[in-house]
Length: 418
Image 1: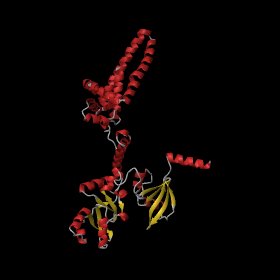
Image 2: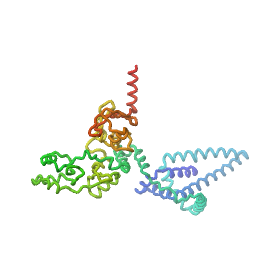
Image 3: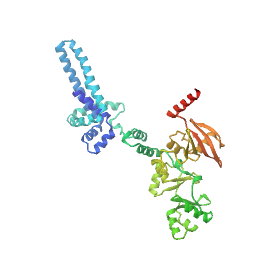
Image 4: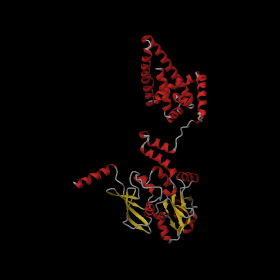
């Protein structure tokens, strides 16, 4: 029983969930606090446990040998050795260690109440053993101070979140994983392309400008003169409303209300840009390349949607850039981002190159394709549906069939053959 107790407590303490133990310790759990203190120096804990375990096993072996000799003479030594080996393996090693490995908290926390005072009582003997052992290990370049801190990397944390199961709702798991993915994404991946930026061109006729303001659905609009490169600023529609009420809506007043635009270097990681928006109290920035040319527009809402999903559509359905045509075919806009498409549709199109579907196809073909061109890319059948102004407007995609779809397709093919 003593051997089983020491063996089980060793396995339990070494296999216990360190993060759950720390959480319980912070909440005032006595056993968790003691177990955490014992595990701060695992060399001392192992020295204490093995000291007790070997002392008990050697004493048991001596007693069994004496009993065997008294009962059966010299043959009793062999019998005692065989019987004791089986008893120790079954009752003192395998069974208690298996129990401790399956239920470490049930064993570790009660055992810590015994091991802590024993460590203090046997400290001189433990110190001698550990000093000797550590001296031997230092010859091979090993030191107890080199013990791992058990900190989790981003990939390990991702695995923990993914395997949380029912402990964390699936939607919350996706949000946590999205936060971890932000460090691998850049503003270029989610920005609104330059060609799709909606703004007020101050050089247009005044009646068209007024009509655009009246029908506008956005809170903020860029204002420019002829081209987005001649950006004048950002116009907040709430401030324009004051001009309308006061009947002072003029070109000059619009320009006077425009705030200075904020520019974001291309390639900025999303997590850095989120913090930048927060510290600068901004909600919109224009992505510029190394030459200072505007490439697109990124907003705080775009970054938040990377975490919680799109605000305007159900994240469980297709994006606003994708339309299902049935029979495992989808009509996709050429400007949609590859990363967005993969995240929303569960596809695996390559993300290590161009960031849009249009760029992916043109890079693969090394030319601007015509409507009707079909290609296969990593099992995905892509057929150009429509082109416009030297770019692909829409693509009809048929993803590879997997699981039940593939089985159904194979069954249909078999029926046709019959």
